[in-house]
Image 1 (cartoon, rainbow, N blue to C red):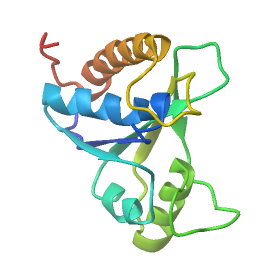
Image 2 (image 1 turned 180 degrees about the vertical axis):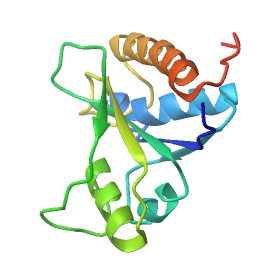
Image 3 (image 1 turned 135 degrees about the vertical axis):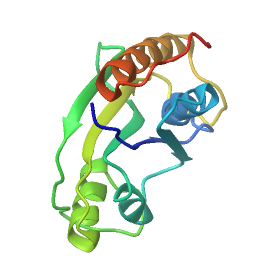
Length: 157
């Protein structure tokens, strides 16, 4: 199996309750120190991420998702031309399109959406249900990473 360099970008606002699922996920993976995995945590995706992703073979975008009965969703992405392009708050597909258009980079990309429920009020911390979904997403990702990337994942919690 070829060696692949992998980037995980967890994004969202931890000050908005369950919107902090992406950063909570990326911080948990960063603490594990997985071989070959670089981690970036941010409030939102911005145009600068397009340059960053071109340095990687594979990118995983982790964010909170709403209105689903699944604990998480993991799907392969393709770049998509943006309908409009602002200076901030891009979708993962738009980051990929910019990476391709501006820098000729086209990494394999996946999105990990983790179900959240409490987004309205400004407060730190995840709801109990979102925390359970985060744990399920972490277990899935560690298994996927070991199987797909071919690098062992230690038993460290």
